[in-house]
Amino acid sequence: MDESSMPSPSVTAPGPPTPPVPLAALLAREELGLRRIAGPADADLLWVHTSEMADPYPYLLGGELLLSAGVLLTDPDRYVARLVEAGAAALGFGVRPVHESVPEALVEACDRHGLPLLEVPPETPFTTIARAVWRLMAEARHRELRRVTRAQQALATAAARPDPVPAVLHQLAAHLDGRALLLTATGEELHTAGRHPSPETAAALSRLAHLVTRDRPGAPASATDTAGGTHLSAYALGGEIHTPTRGDRHPQGQAQGERVTAPRPQGERLALALATRRREPGDHTVAGIAVVLLSLLTAPHRGTAAADRSAALVRLLLGASPAEVAPLLGPEGPWTVVHARRTDGTRADALTAGALGASLGSTLVDAGYGDGDAVRVLLQEPHAPAPQPGWTLGAATPTPLPALPTADLRAARALAHAEATRTPLATETPATGLASLIPPDRAAAHARTLLAPLTPPLAETLRCWLSLHGSWDRTAVALAVHRNTVRQRIGRCAELLGTDLDDMDVRTELWFALRQEPPSTP
Image 1 (cartoon, rainbow, N blue to C red):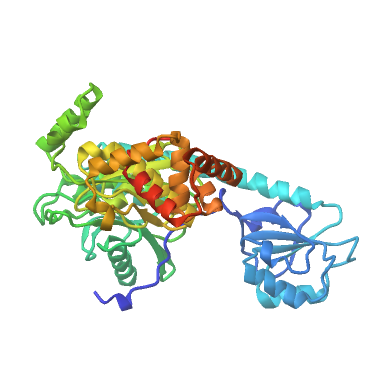
Image 2: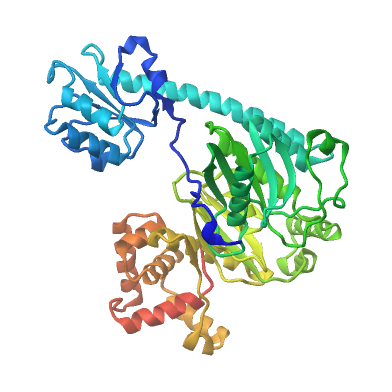
């Protein structure tokens, strides 16, 4: 497929904390007395902001209803142009005491630039408008949660049916009022449900499926596009389909028009594709639930291997060592530990964590690790971590099963380094060069002797500070402490070690020791 002919889809990103409020819903509140006097009638309000600055552009996020009395309004055309450039949704202009009426030049500028302009009567305080918008957002959020809950229950019930994959797709298409398809990386339809798309839409969905299923570093886990007024989405799944021979139809599939195809080649990636006439609040959440279910349903069945893994987990719970249960877990490794955290600061629940694991190619996911906002994923070859949109990742080097506890801490350190340096993925670098020439036992003995005066928190602070080239601010971010705390700890390290930490030779030897000494949790 020629990638130059592919669309330019956007990777899905987290939206505002509440659903948008249609401008018409706010204007319908008669007690506010608002009147649209210029600009289009349709707009979605994401926030409310009040400003009397001559140019509020630097302080706008986009989607605001900006409220102003025009205290510093001198150039209406430039003022409106800057609001449109910042992505403001609408302008509410309060009359009196500054202006007896809305300036005609402002009305003309809003019509010219396509910005809705609302006249706010003197008896309506701006705070009353803001309160009305928040109330409308709360009502919209309540409707969205009810809709998502109903969809989640329906999808879970469908996943328990004898033919779960087509049943889940059928429920998904019904709740989103559109088309749901399970596609291969080449665009082949395995299962479909809902209304049939146009040829243009089908071709665009195929291109999106290819985009999210590419076996390349940095491939997005989800993407969106539009075609002929239809909203399109594609999500990478973590499983692979195993179905009867091509042409066979089961009763449910025949009734619903879902096609059943031949078994897929081992390791072929799949995608969930959606085509809907409109996008409603909660659609992305409903799709995420379906992604997790379909990833589990299309995962290869390993029979005896699955039983062996269950037995291994039981033995671990009963006190067996990792080395004893390693043979039951399949190949000895290497395994890669990945730590992840949402870039927008939100906590990852089981659904988003499962979707991340599916994108990375693993169902071994631990959500809510640490303070509850981090996720751990365990990968086995040939899977390797790749940057994921909306996530910051830290990965340890591949390691055998018995060494996973050490790799787990190193992955946490790599995540802290990624967040401090604002990189989407930080991977621990193994010891190479001169450091690899020293026998590990001798290197560890020297490290223990050199670092003996330091407590675990001090040693970890020193290691992090050195890894970030002595940056106080980045070390504070990585350790989630104040920069003054970092300075105090580093000063204490220098005092206990009796050395000058500004000396590069000293830093080099300490860095080597900190890399060799078995890590401890501060």
